[in-house]
Amino acid sequence: MRITRVAPLGLCLFVAAAGLAAEEIERDFQRTFDVEPGHRLRLEHGDGDVVIEPWDQDKLDVQVRYRAEYTRVGVGNKVDFDVEFRQSGSTVHVIGREGTTWSIGFFSRQEMEYLYTVRAPAYLLLDIEGEDGDVEITGWRGEIELSTEDGDVELAEIRAPRAELSAEDGDIEVEGFEGELVAVTEDGYINVSECAISGGRVRGEDGDVTLSRCQ
Image 1: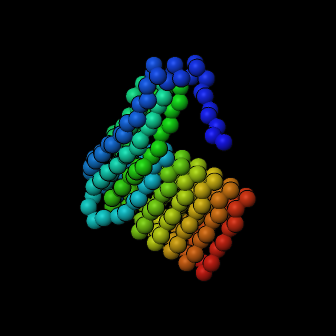
Image 2: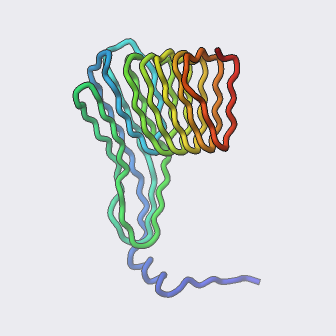
Image 3: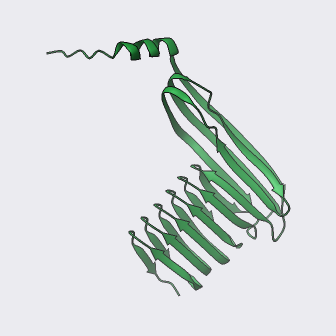
């Protein structure tokens, strides 16, 4: 037996009048700053993933790639994405901004690619804040302060005076670390291996905490 479902007349008239809007946003950003020992990167990456790697130049290079699709049934403003770059004294600020939207009807957005690629000298101080994006840092020597909500954190081959890592639901993975380490999470797990920790603390609430082959 075939069943036919009929949408309410008001909804059909609204959709017919407003129309279906589907659009893809594609943005690329790139900026370079001169830096020296004592300079800091303040990065607010939202839901974007972050990859940070050292190089042998006294320059900070940041590339941001954003690609998303959104669909709207109804009326509302256009959605966009932008990155704010600015330098204040010894601090370089990089702030990703996903445009807010108002919509009457149905609205959905799907991020297909959202990535920050950072190359800088390993002495740069890092101050990173995110929401759902993952962060991966390798080969660093400057102090690291990092907080995220649902994103995962991976640190490898870090020789820093101090690294302070905080995640709510995300996982923290640290391998080959030397220095003072603070790692705190709520629902995620913490895995620390092959480390020489001079001090600090490692704490979890509902997740597992594992330390292996550490001094």
